Image 1: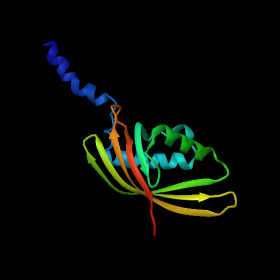
Image 2 (image 1 turned 180 degrees about the vertical axis):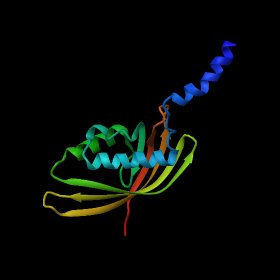
Image 3 (image 1 turned 45 degrees about the vertical axis):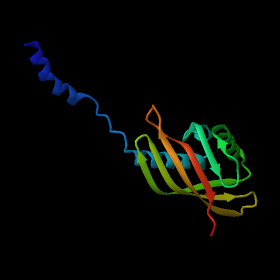
Length: 151
């Protein structure tokens, strides 16, 4: 009899429990992570600038040897610390393809650099990022290739 009474209370207890939001679907989570990085970079939030990348990151940029997570983080921190110029990023995500814990993203980063003289230059950088979902459920870039767009 006690079990039946407890079973009857279960729906009422569940109704009172705080609702947990379902995690966003992978493409939405990945787009949000990229947008957060863009906002963090543009706001010069150096403490968060490497969060998008996995520690095992390897990447290739046209004309440079393969780079790693420490090299990228160092470069990003130096760029944010250089107050003599400003770089602002825009982003265009072309597609997100998810395969289980991996995802491939085709995108274009649009950077506008303004020098000490006030002159600005805008460049487009095409890229393919490979994201991996970590044990913590967070999507991070583990590999990428990037190259400047030429007219």
